[in-house]
Image (cartoon, rainbow, N blue to C red; front, side, top):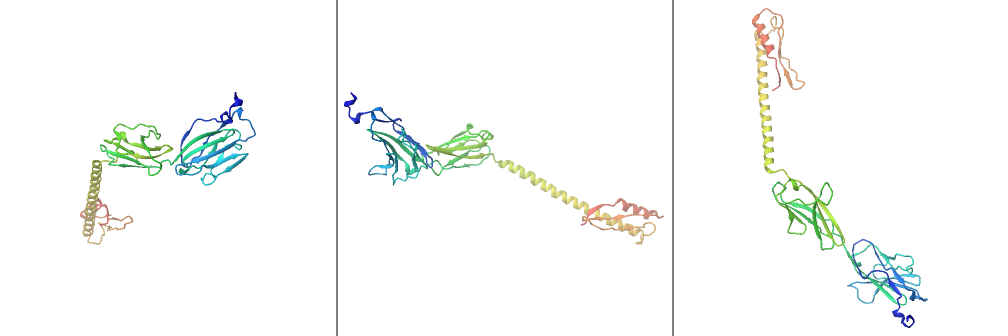
Length: 330
């Protein structure tokens, strides 16, 4: 029965892979486009295996673009597709049942349909649809609203680069790790990247992470949410500091007045001591002096008495001794 079948109906080349594949890949990634095949026993003969890889894109018209081929133990690279420097067969000898290729450094312009065509007595074709997109750019995270207890705060997240559509997802990190749940009182805002917190409290404080994803990847940003001191607390702290400053100034003023008074008392006592001895400071008052030196800005006044027989002068000198004080020079 098999002898009367035409060659085109023989089970010759069969690509051992599923039907059409659809791949979404990120810009800059590398990919293996698989094309393993099997030669059936009916496909005997001297004819060698021929392999072609063809790229078709919506922008490309005209004849097929064969960017890589194999025939009679020779590998040929096509031109004009921009792939010749980034593509190669996975196997050194693709005639050994594997026509898969490796494509490196994917670009958005590589988006298209890739056909693997293996020829012997018949032809088998396998298609891979490749879509190359850019991952979301690193987003920006910020807050809007007063970070005080009881207020409403809006957490915002936005990515300015990459291939849309984007999906935004907020989480509250637990102990520095993702996967935490959002606390109660948080709802989705009007924009996709917004998270609204009603009645801000201590429960809502912590680190929040925004994750932006598309078909080919994701990127994240984080922000730390802390309560700011309330205005009332600031007023109380300011009042306390102001009161302490006023008390300090008042204490300095009282201290200065006391020192001034004591200095005058010292001067008066020594003056009385001089008067009692007739200004000669002999007999009853051997010494009635004013010693003035100020290693630390301090003046010392001292009135001393010695041997004598005049009771009034002695009493006056004793009074001077009792009034010895130390005061800053005014």
